[in-house]
Amino acid sequence: MIEIKNISKSFADILAVDRVSVDMKENTVFGLIGTNGAGKSTVLRMVAGVLKADEGSITVDGIPVFDNVEAKKKIFFIADEPYFFANANAAEMEKYFSTVYEEFRKEDFYRYLDSFGLDKKRKINTFSKGMKKQLALLCGICSGTRYLLCDETFDGLDPVMRQGIKSIFAKEMGSRGLTPIIASHNLRELEDICDHVGLLHKGGVLLSRELEDMKCNIQKVQCVFSTQEDKQKGMEGIEIIKKEERGSLYTLTVRGTREEIVGHFATVDTVFFEALPLSLEEIFISETEVAGYDIKKLILG
Image 1 (tube, rainbow, N blue to C red):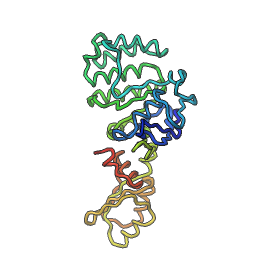
Image 2: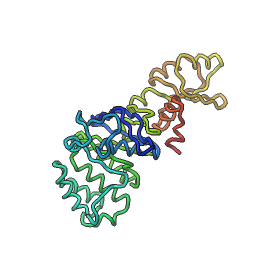
Image 3: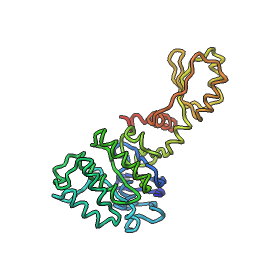
């Protein structure tokens, strides 16, 4: 597990990360969400040991990460703009990473190159942005490290390639306990892959939750009440996070399990009732509005 405790980081008079605390559990996919400038990349660089936190601590499986070779052996970091040696090709990068990471899987690496249509002898500086991202991801996946830190992993990848990488993540998690940690400004990209999501805003953690818990404990209800008395009864005894009214149709975002909410409305006479699943986007909008923020401006543009 990666444990981040109360870390802060400033550059001159700019506070980039402000007292961030979060745990990233092994064998899960952790999504770090935030707008440009929210501090995502700085947090990842501190977790990778590239930068040292001004305050607080970061440990990887109980080992302090900064300036510690044993901790860094467990991590592969992919920056938003992946770095490769000048004039190198994929085969030459494999030779380099094989000397750095003892468990680098050469056979898998070349097999994945063929699957993704990447020429091992072609100069990387002639690759497109998406091809460079694919190569960096394949290097990280085959490095054999437990933790894979990805900054804007899917930016520049087409939908087919995104799905291919997600499938490899799932396979590697099942076979050897890989833990991908993905930073992105796009909430929709991570909805179908993450187990836990942390939302960064202005250098601090606005929200950090297990997705399954969030999805199980917040519901969207659409209903038409038979009478005013039924409406009053229906609105009482539950925690309504958000309420919208269009004519006689009410759309309610309610905290509680599906069973609890359906059971509550079963005691009320309604002309129409249905409980709908919420998307990750809708959940975050509801949770952050309660905290006084408008995520539509922070993340969704």
